[in-house]
Length: 527
Image 1 (cartoon, rainbow, N blue to C red):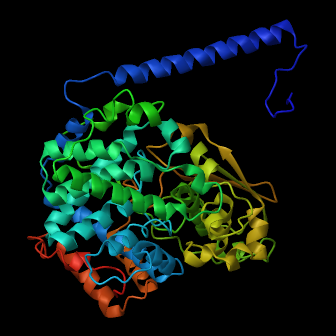
Image 2 (image 1 turned 180 degrees about the horizontal axis):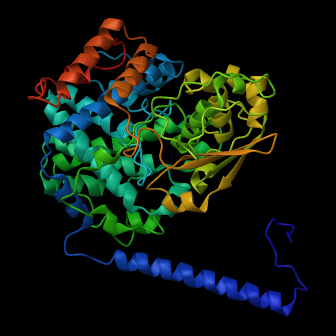
Image 3 (image 1 turned 90 degrees about the vertical axis):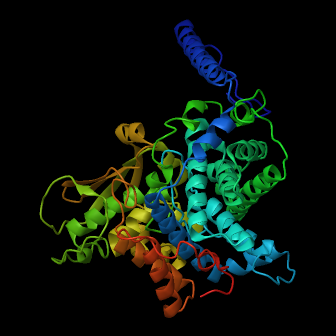
């Protein structure tokens, strides 16, 4: 029962057997917690070479042309997502915050850096590393672009720094353990390490100095998840602060300043304080393996990544049922099936032809726990809630197809057909998909019709994941649409796409590797 001060008291008068069971359960839980803490403590035992130096040695490896081509793809994708935000309603207040309302006279001014560092995640089109639960691009790329302007760096140097920055952010994200993600915004807490590594690469620091930059960054890691529990504009502040943190840490290391050598594994270090079930070994695992940027996913839709597998499954359902039939629950059937999305990533449970079902009675979304924890909004009241609503994402996709920006605006949220279908969506945890997470983000859609028939659609991965990659054409089309929404002219978009095609050429030597200036033109006033 609840006491008057709000605490919970144990009910009195319980049976001795029940009390014994409760005591046994409590004891088992205490033992499990104790064992986990012991395991973390053992993993954090001192090592002759501090983890920060081990990570810096890994990051010192050479970057190949294939890695650079991948970095340029992420840079182009970031430019599209950031350009749209820069031209949208939030662009002006973010610029005012970055410039402190003061005149900005040079493209190298810090205001351009701070502005760009706040843009990359706002439309939910930020690249994602699933297992690390980190969005590296919005934090790493603004640092690289800023230093390219300040230092006059080449495109090749920029690509190398992006690859190394992504690797650091992802490795830290893999090592923090699942409990960290419960309270901490990992893109903020882990992204700062990526920004530090990228800046160190741009500065040309050796491994010893890079280790100092990483250690200094560890002492300032932050970013509370409270920003997603209530209306807040803290998310762009998180990415901007993480970028600033990494740049400052590398600048300090460049000047000869030191961080604590055991900032990761020390008694009062990052893992001990912020990561109850840290996995330090993952920070430096597979030191000669492929760069982690190749494991990073592109997001095709402006919604939380946890909603993307359900969207993919809904697109497969729409292709099977037919767009006309799903246009309005209870409407007359149509025999015209919808064309499938070019990259749904979903697998119908059977190879049955397109059908015209009776009205939908229920839609069950089965997925992993974090998808429900982040995206359970049955009646989204605003744009942000809609982008974090499995119910809305599934309903709008079934009714309208590929969810673009207007799919989450007020008109779509308030559409009576969308609201009726949204109310039929139920969420549940799938043990199998929970087990696969976070290495795989998956969803199953079970649609029950009024006549009792059941159709199942599986999306074990989402479009843009390594298992279901977007083609170059699909990615280029997406980027062009974002730049267009960012008020770029047709000629500016053409030049942008042409430049990246030269840099990403798979035959012959890439062209344009000496030209960093074009890739780093400030977004403010560009296009």
